[in-house]
Length: 187
Image 1 (tube, one colour):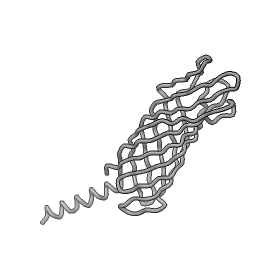
Image 2 (image 1 turned 180 degrees about the horizontal axis):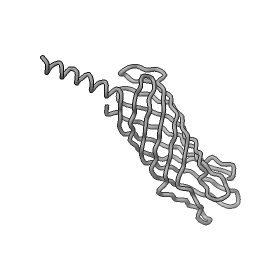
Image 3 (image 1 turned 30 degrees about the vertical axis):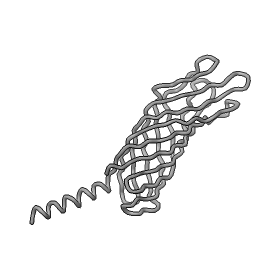
């Protein structure tokens, strides 16, 4: 009887822990835009990313950390001078605080979140018909978005507003990224 009670308590504890901490992989699509007034035109580009996440649930609130790899593309041009196409890739890390607006118990929930994202571009490609453009490797962003959890799947839509000026010259160039992701929670 003691072994049976110990097994039942262990199952209850594991289930409670699984509700407290969740982790898993996440895959995303990134639509990156240049945010600048120093160029005559700009266009967005689409690319991909993947990461791992860990989430700590506290009743209706949660905290989430993410670490991964992402690619971004966009272009800017100056009338009479030329166009520059950027392809950026590297690691990124996010810290997120969220609130579950509509909790559906074990079925999932609808949530909103805000946070901070830091990217380090380890591979920067700028193609143009002019000279090489100096580009900062680190980018900080604030983010906000909505998400829904259904069973073990998590869907997020977020916007990352760049805080860092990426153009090392006298012009200002920041990024705005729309990110749509799909994740799977192991616990």
